[in-house]
Image 1 (cartoon, rainbow, N blue to C red):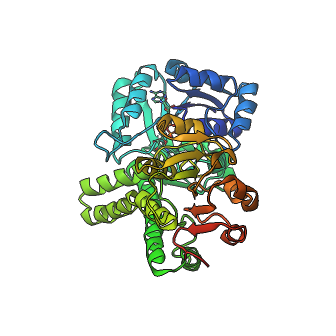
Image 2 (cartoon, protein in one colour; image 1 turned 120 degrees about the horizontal axis):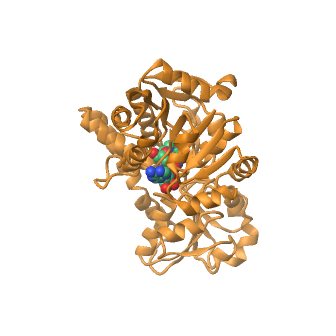
Image 3 (spheres, rainbow, N blue to C red; image 1 turned 45 degrees about the horizontal axis):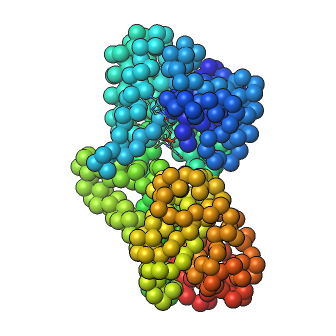
Length: 440
Ligand code: NAD
């Protein structure tokens, strides 16, 4: 099929590349000319495992190309994926759907034949209906332009795998014709046994919000329990393994840490909480808000642990933070807990150097007040404390013996429970891990 992907960001680029990989002819559209030029040259503007290879393969064959012209995309494709951003609104609680409606308004005049628009962005319930009405009104093809909602569940760092082998594909369809179109576009994935869950558009929109709200609650739950473990001298890692064996709870997504971050989870929990309130589900809103409050408290909880370990305030202490991205496998630093903690310690008077294997350039744009170092060894120069804040394997593999001479004091606070604490302690380090006893 000939498809377009409108919006070439963390979602759109992997989606466009994956659609080419499963055999479609694909045109990606973005407003950002510099990004389009890089993409057409086969260059990858984001760090995402396996994406550069797919981009260069499919741009070379011509099966995948990029443009800034929606007119060109409308002429070329019969199905358009909408993957533009939906940042949090100025009120800080609901989605700003300006990019979604802006792209639709710009595309509409070019839609002269029957077309299916497949919304992938995360939106408030009701957006699909409003978008369908707008496109029917503004497009020459009128009611023959239909809107399907197909929320995206990919995880950054696993975007290609999650697009080619998702747990499920959810589609909210307004008609049998629209359902046929999505079945056709995803046929190669369905043939591999990927389940297709077909529902109405409102349910599809809420499925996405509910899934991320649940994941956020799960993380906040275990982080709250980690605080209990810290106070009781218990071990959150062992507790997690034990409760995770219950299939009703499950081990996945249940890792104590510095809190959830990124371009999705924080805003999705916020927006879902606001929807719950708007829809009159006040108790659900209270429960979700509690999960947000736990998450908002993570930087101060981390600072508490750091200061306990140091035995003094961080003021005037030279601290190295390992990790800037909100999680491993991405250079995305949106709402990154690692950077929130680094910035908080900087505000409290610490001298903070941040090292990340891939996210230093993106972090520097967001937090220019911090110092950065591209190399792990270089980041340690005379550090009095290391805070491990992002779970890059690179940090797990670091050799505690080799690093010891580089620091002023051998002290490490592991907010991800990533390292082999015994090995570090054997090499002379004082190690504190989140939600675990001070010394095992
Ligand atoms: P992003 O900000 O990285 O990318 C959005 C892109 O859309 C930008 O490149 C922007 O220039 C482009 N754009 C804006 N208006 C446009 C227009 N009129 N025409 C063409 N391009 C336009 O955002 P993202 O992280 O890719 O997220 C996109 C959507 O996907 C959001 O709704 C997000 O919640 C959802 N989502 C993201 C992920 C993820 O892992 N990032 C996962 C699931 C769902």
